[in-house]
Length: 256
Image 1 (cartoon, rainbow, N blue to C red):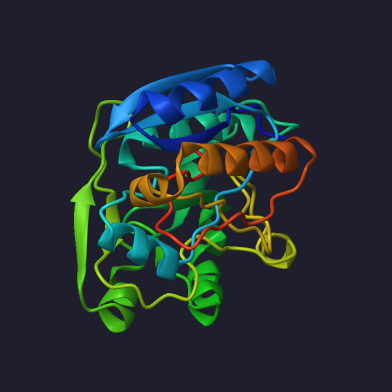
Image 2: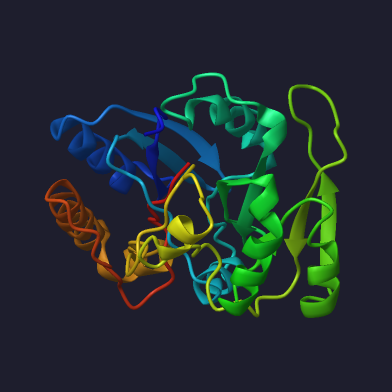
């Protein structure tokens, strides 16, 4: 298993009337948290070793972007940490040959999941993912795949360990994939293609979406805070149920 730090990210309207009660609730439940400001909201990152999912459909992401709320996810700046983490993937070999490994990415422009795949399997993986209608990227290898299936895309250089190695992170401009970050449903694909996990998208897991600023103004902060308490109760009980109010979400757990 991978020894990695995982966090639950919660995007909270940057106002003391809701922010302080949420922080107090997290502290009361024994969570250690840190925070940073982002686009008029406060991103609170909660340390929790049980967070092993990031679930966002392209439909959800499109709605969030349209409403001006930015989904959180793994971005290019995390690649160095990912690269360094590859050495921990082999339980019986603490020092694998990194040249024999490659990072296969499945992502939306705002959310991305990386898994490790052996080089000699990467062509089959791309074909397999194509049939699943997911957005994929393997530097160089799947440019043709994107040109055929997603005519509008942007490629941006990424840097690992302070040096550029010719890899690109492709950002698809449209949202035609049925799922942005689903690679496996039951582990079958991982077993078939000898995938090793960096992160696993659990099947039937939905992001928790709770209220927004307009909702707060119309219903009051107490209602949103009650929803947050319910979410934390379910989360600590091991549930990952969707808590969705009839409004644009601004509290969004994700893998950061």
